[in-house]
Length: 199
Image (tube, rainbow, N blue to C red; front, top):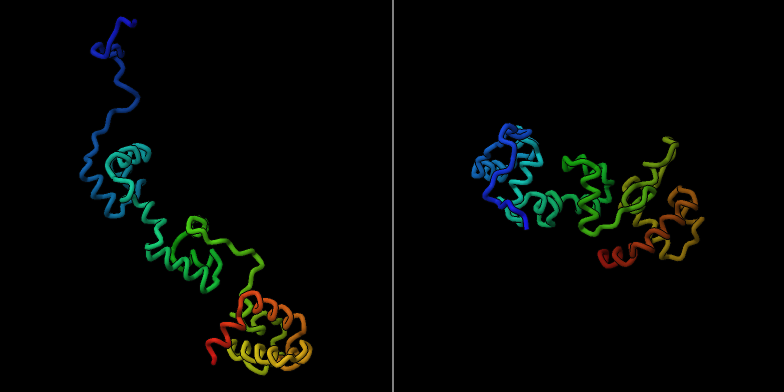
């Protein structure tokens, strides 16, 4: 059995420690944290390190009220905007990050947390842009310049059982473009939604 106990101070009294102990006003720390002050700014204000601030916050702020919980909540308006821009508007993560004011990596991390699968690099929503936007020949003329009218002509021609080379002649595009767009619209159930909204 050891001969000492906790009542005996066996530390060297000549050494005060590597750093002087800092007393932090906990109420001020809580108010500054809830007002949106970052951990780095808090550490600079209280003249201490960021791990010290995080250690105090761990005991002062309940888990449900910590900011990172709100950052990854689906009810957060910023996260709702991220999902809408990425899923509905088919924007890239870089474009979404520029619109919401976050980094590209943060947008990808939040999409992963919400269970949204990332699109491949070569993904294109073929029903959302006109072939003229990818055509390198500026003098090429199309029967319609509106994307909705273009998709409507393509859909009607396909449903009339016209061959693909005929559809290509009508829309003044190549046959490979017709094949790609028809395959895309089949996979995305475009024809079903098109006729359900146009009846």
